[in-house]
Each structure stands twice: as structure tokens, then as C-alpha cells.
Length: 484
Image (cartoon, rainbow, N blue to C red):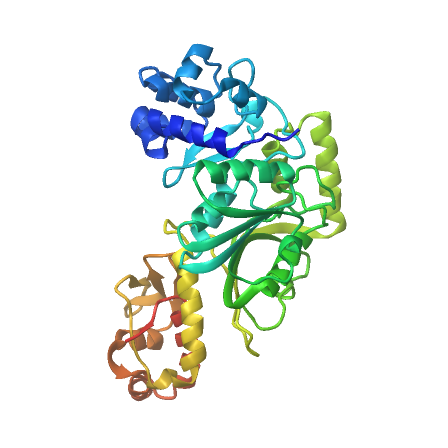
């Protein structure tokens, strides 16, 4: 039986949370930065100690964030208008005074409703487990463009976290999921946050067949391996990386002209195969696409990570059996690694779409969402002005610096490497030669590119200035050169 997080129950919970100060800001204020950081690392005791003098807020922190058993009188006082029998009947609480669901503050003073994880449960999660806010969902939220749109579709909404973020910039939101339990908990998330979201049940894009959206986000069940479903939140029932291929191939059908789709995806690195050729083969015609690879996992490490994610000890009989079948599948399919990253798609309906695959495995701090918007803008600008690069005046942003590495030689220091760094965004880097460095030094918005190239021809006799245009184009895509 599914929990019924009714409008009345969620309204009462919201009132209790606001009264107690059980919000993202309120929890940090009550715990202090050190105890809050420790809680994020899975170290609950500092938060438990810090919450002792926090009254009703402390009770809610220990109940929902620490998984403690709280006295009925304290729970009744903290939840105020909530009927405890109703809360127990619908899994918000258990009969012995524990939290039955993971309900926690998140982001801009939202709340998210999800299932208890393996640590909170003290064992493996069930097949229909609804994942809470994890690294993957946070990373997708940070990588999503946040420009105002009319309609947005969240495919595989889970606990509803992507739709929460969408509420900051989308007028109308539709969320789908295959799991009835996920839809029930997502409904609770939306009611708690007083959001009007259209919820539809069904697999992949079937619930919205024939419709078009200005933006689509998707955190699909992208775990790769044998064709099975151990857990609906991560396993698609499709072999290998077929789930990512399906979403990338079909998402553009549901985008309005110029609409943008963004998702997390995984892809196989197979012996003798280029990963970029693999993922671009999934694209339909007329779609701009930006594939950003953030990591490549060793198959052995990959299997162990996902077993532990579900609360399965790799040393147990179950863990050994699952690991063996998984690794056999990787061996049989000549898998050398598993790539993971972000995909941005735009329905461009053009004959020559821009398709770029690149590695971005170094650390950076800024969210990727603004950069994805900038990349789409730069593609559009190049499409409109690509034939006019030579007559364009460019500037180098102040966030771009030139690093030079030199080694000692017979006549002093001799440059070995010249590397451009963009110090903001994802921190792009480009190695360049001396003529390109001179060209960029002249890009101050005063002279068109053609004049600067003519000057270089004088200084460097025989230089092929036409070869500079592809470099300029790439630097424009990465925001390292901008039209004046």
C-alpha cells in the first residue's frame, strides 16, 4: 500500500516545519557549521549534541535527519497540527517513534520527501526504493540551464528534486515516473512546497507522447550492465548503456523548436571503440549536442560502488553473486571503462548541427548550468556569423590568462608550453602556439581579426592564417574569445 501524502497532511506538516524553523537555513543555524558539515559526512553525533537545546527544531532534526527514536510527547509537540495516527498510517512516522520517510530541508527552503536510505534502514533498500537528494541529482541541477521557459518536462522525477529547481524558471511543469511509489512521494514533495506540478505515470516518454516542451530534464536509470532491474531508481532493464541511448535518441522528438534537453548519462568505453563516436551515433538529425565527460570508472570499481549504494556488502553471498554476473557481462562485451557525464541537446532543425564531445575531468567550482546556456548561445552566434569571423572584432575576457612554461636552453629560457586558462566557469584550458598567443594579445576590440592576421603574416613569414579560424571558433565556443 502506498503512502497517501494528502494535501491536508502536507499542509499540516508544512505549518509544523515553519513554526519550528525546520528549514535549510534553520537547521544550519541550530547545528552550527561544523556539526552540519559533519552530518553531511555521515557523522551524526556532533549534530545530535548540537540539537539538544534546539527545542522542537532539535526534535525534528533528530527524528528526520538522524533517525533517532523520539518520545511521543516531544514528537507531538514538534509536529503540532499533524495527526500522529495519520502520519503513522502514511509512513511519515513509525509506530515506535522513528521517521518512516526521509523528509528533509533542501535548497531554497524547500523540503524533499524520499525513502530512508540503506544506512537509515540498516540494510538493503527494496526494489521500489525512492532515492532522495544524492550527488547525481545535485550535479544535474547544477548543470541545468535556468532561463525562463513556458513548459518543462521532468522525466523520471523520483522524489521531485529536478522539478523543484524547475519551479524557479518554468511557468508550467510536468513530471513523470514509472514508479507509483515515486509519484506518491513526489506528490508529497510538491504539496509540501505548494507547487502545482502535473504528475503522470508511465515509462520514458510514453505519458507525454505527441506533446512538445520548451525544456526537458532527465535523471534516467543510467547504471550500465546486464539487462535487469534490481532497483527502479537506477536500473532500466536495458542492457549496457541502452537507457542513455534511448533518452538521447527520443528526447528531441518532444522538444519545441529551439527547445533544450539536459540529462545525466553513462556510456561504455569498449576495446577499439571511440566513446565520442558511440554517443554521437545515438543522435537524431538536426540536433545540437554537447557531451561533457566528467569521469571514466574502472569496471571493478564501478560494480563495487553500486553494490554499496544499494546497501549490499560485496563480501556477502548476494554481493559476490551479483558482482560476478556483472563483471562477466563487462568481460563478454569488452568493456574497458564506464564514462559518465552531462548531455545538452537543442532541437535546431538544421542540416549542420553543432556536435561536440569533450572531457572535463578536472575539478572546478562553478555550476555548469550557466556554461551550458553560454555554449548554446555561442553555437547560435557562430551559426549566424561563422562566415564573418575575419571581419569581427574580438576581445579576450579578463577571466582568461596565459600560462607559459619554459625550460633552460643555450640562449636562456625557451618556452615549452603556452596554455590559456579560463579562471571561471568550468576552467577551460587550451594549449596554443606563439602566433596564436600574439593574435589573442591583439584582440582588444579595436581591429578586426583579418587585420590582426595580416600583421602576423608580416611577423611570421609563411604562416597559414587560415588555420587560425578553427582555433578562433573553438575559443569562441569556450568563452575565451567574445565578439566586441
